[in-house]
Length: 276
Ligand SMILES: Cn1cnc2c(O)nc(N)nc21
Image (cartoon, rainbow, N blue to C red; front, side):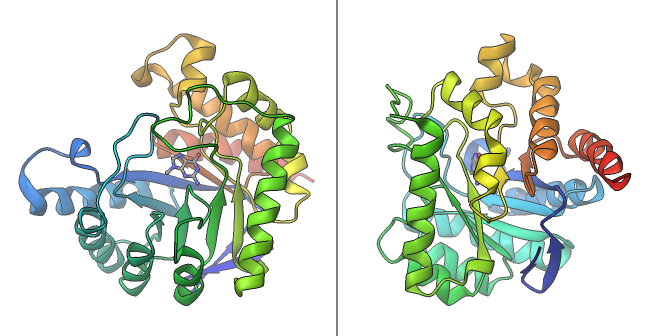
């Protein structure tokens, strides 16, 4: 199955690596806008030379407890970076946003994928995404970043997440989003306990039967810290294990901080697959 991302056809039967490029103030030195755009382009270039196909540009931190960001602030952070990377770097630019105006602007500036952790639930998001013509990743989140980890509960986490994603896909398709432009994501760490995350990881193939390519992100997340007892900076081995499991289970896009290392891990899976 192939999807066109702003003109670049990618085989969703293989696992592609997406590099994380946070453009929130705490991600760069405080040397002002020029430095942060320039640094973002350099980082994107490095991730692409390390083998990333996608670069995920996000202006709003969605980690547990994160504070909301204004629409203008998000536009100011994201747009200059998308424009510069589209001009200077050969990558599919994923824009990590739930904000309709950011989707539109990023698409105009050269983005190739909309990555919405809120699955286009915001007012105007479905129509904005459809107007861009871009593929969209619909991710499951229970609650909101500032409250989602308080006490996540599910009747049956696999079924509940699958049902939510299928409901969102149906709404989006009824509104005019073509099915071949949809990717799905269980949203590891977004309103889930460790047990919920592990059940979702173990059952990843069951989500694939929904018929859409899967995007997953576990890189350096708390779930890996809970399992290993490691701090964020010491979670590369666990992140590689998680990425390898996801690749083995058929994830099409794997969203990570450590591109170079993950590309090699995924290459081992792909080499084994090539043997049939
Ligand atoms: C922005 N972001 C952070 N974690 C993510 C995940 O697991 N999936 C997607 N699609 N986006 C994420």
